[in-house]
Length: 384
Image (cartoon, rainbow, N blue to C red; front, side, top):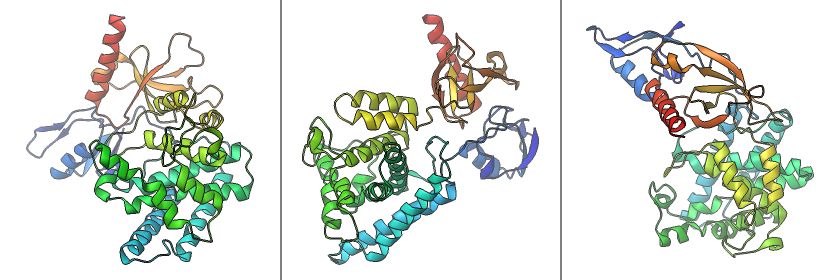
């Protein structure tokens, strides 16, 4: 337990002692986890300091393939390039993308390649950088990182990996021609709206087809990244060998990131569920080899992930195992302590024959939400 100044950096920490207003009214109980709502409440009542304790997350430092500041910089560059292309479109400039912007994109790819060279033994985890309003740019960078990892594992040479990465970074460039209200629509698209959005691969190819600084590989990725092996994709409904292998890499990485990051119309899904969906897709629609390589480079339960055990207890992943991803070392709260007291237990799931991870939970959830999740799980166990 320690005293800390109230600010955004406290989000995710647990309040260790009750917080009272100047009038002596109880504002927050012990055990509440600080989220944005709690933070705003503290600031509104001009609470400068609180006592915090993070029994679950203490000493857990998730490893990242790429430094967060480098990812943020890459997202800013992608946004700048997309904004430039949109401006050119509106001004009637035929070139689509300037030589300067092509150079910026190449520099981003080179920087990401350098970052990944220094992280050979670290698995990929999704990093939430900024709000969903910047989803397209963040998504482009995530897909690029994943595509580089998979292409390297499949044995592509450096020149080909660069071309694949360029295609991944620009794969959604055609969305600048699609109405922003459709891209950011919080609800389900109508049939006509979906058809308009599905034109973005063709739009992207039209924008960049004549650009000499981009390879054929890059342009094909932009045009074909939504094609599926069973012919159910777009824009051409290609099948099997008609879809180049390097395009298939970006297709799978694109699908994975789309499922595991927040969108304007839905929240992200847990990594293990996304991988289960892709496993089913790998039967007919996506390249099974690409899926297998992706699976081997993804941290299914990254360090710091909130988990619910099969006996109803909640906790977080403390140490992830590359060779046995479903059996990490976890730190859990004992059930009887959820009423307010703080106590934790370290469990090595590889040594346990009766416990397994049943589900995941948001580590920024309030204590009440944690208790509710555990109670729901306990009720299911009792029924079974």
